[in-house]
Length: 98
Image 1 (spheres, one colour):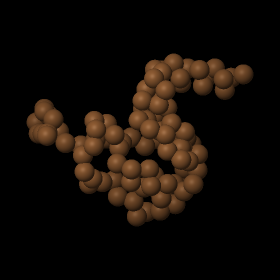
Image 2 (image 1 turned 135 degrees about the vertical axis):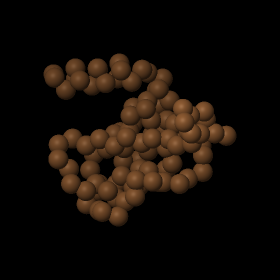
Image 3 (image 1 turned 180 degrees about the vertical axis):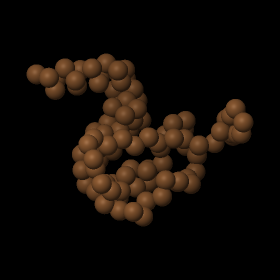
């Protein structure tokens, strides 16, 4: 199955990585391309989490739009508890202010 792309067949899932502050990678051997068997729509390959840990070390991590909970990661997503991520983030922001 290939999704319909504008110019080409879309057959990638993007994983956006964000950091807080100026974190320097602890490894320069992590490739940005992962070739893995297709899973459900938007489900990241398990090795993505391992690569992020290899890249930045054992630091606090959160996965947004998560489909499942993973040991060592905070996870927010509709598939976790059925709540809207916007509401969860708003609640977390209010909690941080108190």
